[in-house]
Amino acid sequence: MSTDLTLHRILKAPRALVWRCWTEPELLKQWFCPKPHFVTETEIDLRPGGRFFTMMNVEGALYPNDGSFLEVMPGEKLVFTDILLSNYRPAAAPGLGFTAILTFRDHPEGTEYSVLARHRNTETAEKHAAMGFSQGWGIAADQLEALAATL
Image 1 (cartoon, rainbow, N blue to C red):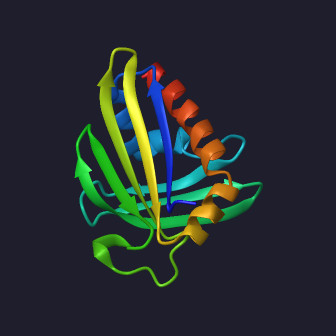
Image 2: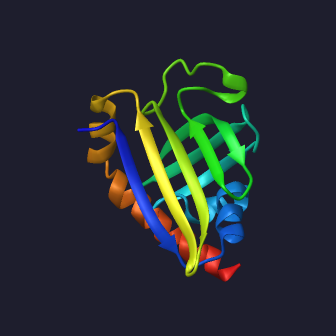
């Protein structure tokens, strides 16, 4: 297995609105976790080295996801990781230890949305896949599309 997991979708919503859903905390809370689970807290400091934090509630259990942005190209690309915390401080115990590269491009039907999740090794990639990366990120993408289309 590769150390990379991918998701590619055409979202039927304008790129600017998809971007807003990724970068505005109150919007991110509404779609980021597959329902019936939900996000209770978010922090988005949208700059390289800025904090990207979510707290997910899964059947009453809370799961913090802390990391930082590595690259921010407004409307086009977001790169974040859980290997580093804000201001590039190394995480003592990273979650899955991966870096996400998100790209957003205009498409005749809305937005071409691509996710590349790069893992440290095949073991963590396999663990992320077994946790339901494709299904979970796919459901979240559906929720993202639905929310963006209402804005």
